Length: 412
Image (tube, rainbow, N blue to C red):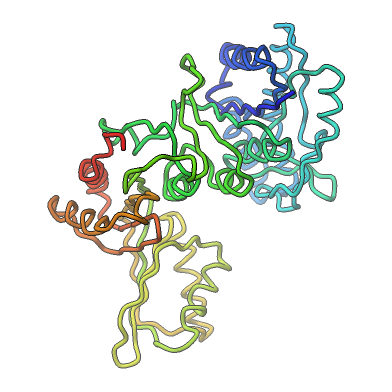
């Protein structure tokens, strides 16, 4: 039988009624002749509750026990989903990560999947099971301990299962009905995309779009897993949602497919750093060691052997970055005059594989921001992306202006 993977996020399984609704969708696919692997998240809000309990019990917690606690949310959902399917006379059973097994690294709370042997589940399919309900977000370490994959890890679980079982498709059911040209809450002209390339989705996910976890898109792109993002709250047709697929499956596309944004950014500038070989390594090495996620980097022209180095990072990592730089200065690794942090900025990006063959995207982007009186602080580009840092108060205006400038409300 062909295999289909269906993943239901927390809002899609938030209560028993929603679990029943999700189970009916699974039943429809079973009736079509599929063997179905269902990946479930914890019921909405449960993971936060479990994390809160851990922090309250032990602020400096043992990461292994943290995983043991927070992984339990998915076990409840998996069991309830299997029971619901059994009540519908659909042969189903639940699977915990260690029972499959989902083999992971030992990095508790941020483990990576190493392998998913298919023998156990395939044996049960061979015995007549039609649905394997698998607890997402979790696996088992080489030491035999429960591990978790980090927030959004159920998306990664679903794609990994689709790759391992050579599934026809991986459907991600969520509270939105697909991938939009931008956040509909920011622009009422946002349009749902029928298809989007893996590379575009990866950029949008990494730049702030919350639809899919970045690691899940990376996996899908590597293993050519067809991903479909769709709503669990609307009636579905065969072409519902957004298909995330290979670039070759897309027809001629617009220069820009979407506008992404990240509100919680900070711009940090080291003023008057010695301009010498290895200075970048001396700066960004300690930042990496401190767990600071550096994004945009700009170095000014050197004057009299000194230069300024600017970089962006999440606003909640500013204190960590400041501490790392102060320690590097004290140890003599680097010498700078001052470190200035601007914590009131936002990142806005335009993304599209069409940029490769369309000239003038940057010029149009900068012109539309100029017309709105928006000053650009930092610019970075890649083959299919242009990102700018701007004052946070102009973020929504910038998103709307760029959406209009590139006519993203119109299909290609």
